[in-house]
Image 1 (cartoon, one colour):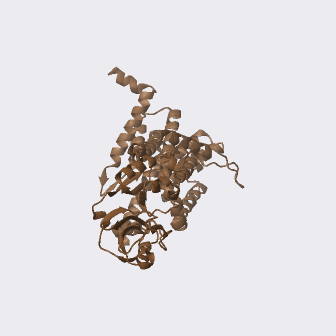
Image 2: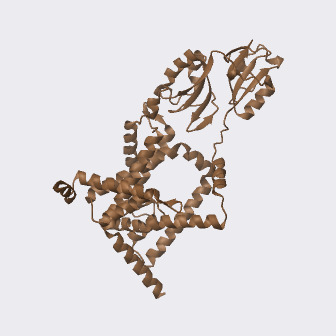
Image 3: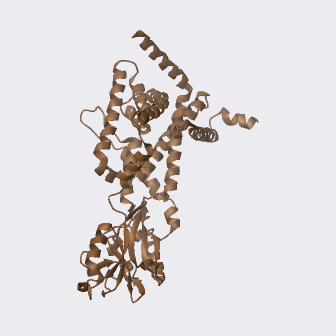
Length: 477
């Protein structure tokens, strides 16, 4: 067993990977343990790192610093890619109220930290670390540590910050859990009802498309092209099928209407109501259930040539007599209009004859492999761009040194913006959900493991030292 002893007796890549793997695996397992219905989650990695660090299974300081920063970059970048598509919409709708609450929490915590620092209970680095840990705000710790480096603070200040963060983090989690339980019981909150109400409030403003079948009874429409029906353009309603003489065909915009024609329409309820008034009456005949050569299929947009293009500009749909009745993006269904711009990963509900749909499928891509395969070039380019943006110094009046977004803020801002752009030429900034979740978990696990390993050796000493100081303050008063 000499090889095993030598493996842990000196710094090496193998030793570093083993320690990080142990911290990640043990911490994740610890986080899954539920006590009274409550679990630590990813915070278990921090405790596992503290335990391993306490037994002096340390890693080279420079390597540990890289692991911590790179883990944080992975976490915030993938988080930004996920929240980016709905970020600005949520900011417009509920941004002021939610950001007001968030600002109040930050200001109250900062005021308490300033009070402790001013009273001499803790030094500045420790106070900032306690603030980050008590609010379980991991990116703020990284930002604060980088800010200290920018103003020329010694390296020990960052170590003290991390140690204070590790001390306060467990109590931040426990305090939040206890507060939520107390509020729930005092105010008798029905969690399921609140979740349902929140989901309803956060539902997208675009209504989910509905389907109806109409019979043409308006004599004024006879001989008029379907695409020229008053009120149809711009209503969000798409007529996909037309039945005439018991034969179902694809509804072409240039099809001349006759009395008795049955139209299958898809779109928002308001638009369908308006179309019913113009056309004549709703019928119980379901054109989708009638036999015929017209079928529907879901097509996935994965070809770079159509990214950012408007549906109305893609002539191959009309050429092959294929109609798009709905578009699904991010799990939300939209009623397509001529000005609807396609993005990578959009799912189109296409109606037409099977051979024609096959041809259209090749033009939009329709590749599950491309959808589920991560794009490594845009991913690494996005990370590099985020680090560059985070390193740009911003001079603000009243501050002794220029501030930067840092390794936490830069990648987060860039990821949010890139997820809105969706694609730039052949570069697709989209990341499959499974890959995003995996990289995010790896990132936060590496970060918390590194923080715990760095602080574990002195954690117990500092923890009981803080406890003794608090006891002496209380007894003195």
